[in-house]
Length: 251
Image (cartoon, rainbow, N blue to C red; front, side, top):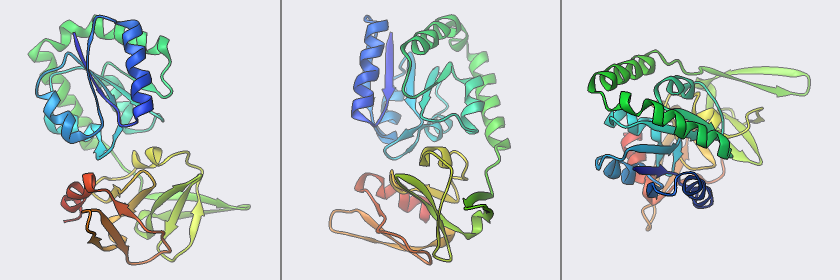
C-alpha cells in the first residue's frame, strides 16, 4: 500500500507522516511533495492513495487532479472549508480540516478501505471524473467583496480590486490606492472564491488581479517583481520556482 503525501509545509508534513505511520505502520509513504511539478511525476507512478494539501508551493492541487484525471482516490486537506472543496467532498474519499485530528484521519482511512473496490472499477472512475468536470463547469466565482469600516459597509466589484494581501490580517487593495481590512481569515479562503484565470496567488502573502498588473521585471535570480497599474503595494515578488507558471498565466 503506497500513499503519496502532497504538503509544502515541512513541519505540517512531518507531523502528518507521523500520524499516518501511527495508524498504518505497514504503508509505504511517498514524499512529502511540495510542488505540482513533483506531484505530477509521482502520480504517474500510480500510488494507491493520495493525501493532498489544497495549496502547494506553485499552485493548488485541485488544478493538478483536474488536468491529470488520475484513477486514484484522494483525501484533501485544507485550512478552511470553502466552495470548491465542497464538490470534492462528494468525489474524493474525504477532506480534513487542519490541524488534522488523528481520529478523523483514521475515519478517512476506514472510508478508503470501504471504497477501494469502487476506485478499482474503470466504469466507476469514468462516471466520477465526468461528475467532477460537470461540477467544475458549474462553479461560480465571487464577483464582489464586502468590507466594513466602523458602522459602514462597502461592496467592491472585483474589477475595482487590485488584489489581496496578508499581514496579520487580510487586506483588500482597491485600485484607487485605499487598503481595507477584510473579515477573511486567510488567503487560502479568498483564493477558493476567485476565478484562477483572473487572479493569481503570487506568493503566500499576495493574490493579484490580472486587470491591475502592468507587468513584471526579472532579477538575476530569476525571481519576478510585479508592477501594478494602481494601488499602494509593498514589493510583490514571484519566486524562481513559480516564475514559469506565472509567465504562462500572465501571458
